[in-house]
Image (cartoon, rainbow, N blue to C red; front, side, top):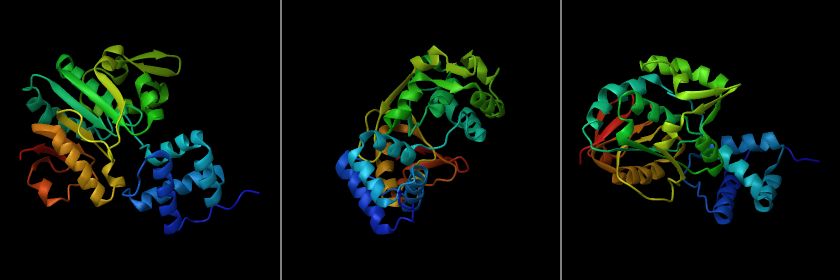
Length: 275
């Protein structure tokens, strides 16, 4: 008989964090404990596992760990999420980026690819496609495989179309997809300028120099110490006068970085490297 999915206590949560780090090398120690606990509890409820059954599955079933990782790390996303953010990019950031010979963009924590493809479409519509390249990264190999294919349900694309319209770009969102039955595939020219790869924000460092970095709605899952470490990676990855874009509910608390990142748009949390 399956055990009950009782509430995880702090000792059990710490034990699971240590287990995952030792077995698989993923360190969730500085993730928001409330968010981590909520997501693990959801897994236990879906699987009808108690704490001991969850431990057993993590130790003995590597395929289950992929499910576990996806539930812990995948963020809800959509194309042109928060249209006001993309309008701010269009009017406040892109005219400046246009002065660069090459525009390299890092979409960090890209999940299933909706954000980097939105950025690719934006660059295309503004006429910067040929001088821009987007590096899209995530910790999760499964969602990256989905992102690389660039295939989304037609129902979702129709849902994202209103976001696109609110950004004020020409035509329609479906102009950028090949439609077959109930699926929509991103056009090949958008894929050509987008590279998806694995990157762990917690343990991996800077890997290129970028004119813009987008990491939206990821910071909220990190404790302040981890936020500072990730900010350090972003700051060292930005070229001078490059732009950092965070989610609307996120903020830079560090006095050190407040002096080195100028606020471009406080509502949309867009910053420019000045120090």
